[in-house]
Amino acid sequence: MTVVHSGPLLGGFYTFCGKNTAVILRTPYSRRSFHSLRTNTMKSCILLLLPLLACGTVLLNSKFTYSTANTQRNPQKGFVAFGGDATDPCSAFPCSMENRYVQFAPLMPDWNKFDFSSIDAPLANAAARGHQLIVRIFVDYPGWISKSIQQILPPFLNQTKAMDNGDGSGNIYPDYNDKNLILALQQLIAALGAKYDGDNHIAVWQLGLLGHWGEWHCSEMPFASTANQKLILDSYTRAFKKTRLQVRYPNVLGGYSPSHVNIGFHDDSFGTDTYGDPTWSFYGQLQSTKASDSWRHQVIGGEIRPEVQSCIFGGRCPSMQPLRWATCVNYTGIAWVWNNFAFSTGYSGQTQRDALSAASRLGYQLHLSSLQVSQTCTGNQCQATVAATVVNQGNTPFYYPISIQVTVSGQTATVILDTTVGLSVVYNLVLSGPSVSGETLVISLNSAFVLPQAPVKFATEQANSAGSISVTLA
Image 1 (cartoon, helix red, strand yellow):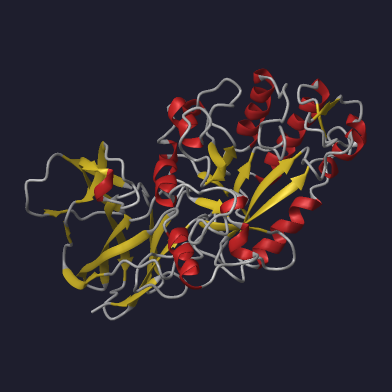
Image 2: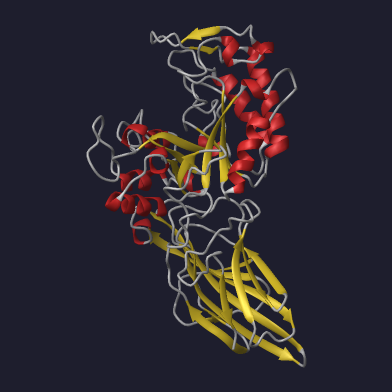
């Protein structure tokens, strides 16, 4: 893709004919003007459409209407169910992802020996429904996998010291500074990366492993030392070069600052502890680590705090008052959240409609706003130029590589998209061969990081059920 960067727009149009190009313009903007959810105004840059005139005979010149009605099940955005079992968890509410906690002990029966069947089965179950999985491996799980070292760890690590939770429950957890445990986890991570990195069955891989529920904290100190956190984090970034990673806290990163690691974060008390206390809140930690804009490049996810899942979109919460939804989304740039209530008990009436609206505002929305096709011919050989204008009207980028593809009369052209929020780009795709006059042109979105049976759909009213748009050329 060739990018043409211009200075201030002085008016008029530009003619640009060539192979698979994009034409853009940079100018200052306010975030508020591009998304109603983002209330804090700041100076930045937006890539605006530079008008493009096609060369030759015009075969199509169409504008399209923005709509999110067809994108409720788009990959890697919205509400997430707890799943991975044989039964579809998303019958009561639309989803494209399922979350799966996986116990460590069965995965690694001995040094450098692995059994990943407890990961593979949920991946297959979810994929059969067109869903991707969010995977997190835990070592201890308070109240469940927490009664003895023999229950928590595989036999070859049973000499690891047990630490008491200190809450009178009798729950214990392993010493996360045990050198053998850390070494075993490093071996596991290397094997996981070798098998699963880049697997399109997986939307996000959460680091997990350390701390209760794999959330990188413990009820009582000591937790894993900074040095041991770094060993685990470095193992992950070596093993996973393609699949997106997440960790719980932006300020518990093995001594790294967020800008120095290719990792996103997950707010597991979304809606209650997202903002407020500058030390404890998720957004406060993002600010203190200079990571409040990390959503621009890294996936932010989380879980709506279970106590408010039933009432955050309407009604009275009996135990705690939720924070403002729009502000939580605005501050964090979150792309998806676990919300088990939406899929288990479920909402109804206006609350259901409000929840659907809230889910649709998470993540990206890629809209095909206009399409122009022109053609020049010499004898029986023609060159068709397709100028497709795509704008991301969502709240986050699409975090994996994604391309736009046009197909007509057996000819295909593709170009990689830039999915920066608020970005409007004219993509210039060229097809050479017989005349395409009178033929049907199909334009679609393609990514190797989603399931083929569940593609990314255009947020465009004219898109069909598969998410693509078909037009007949003059």
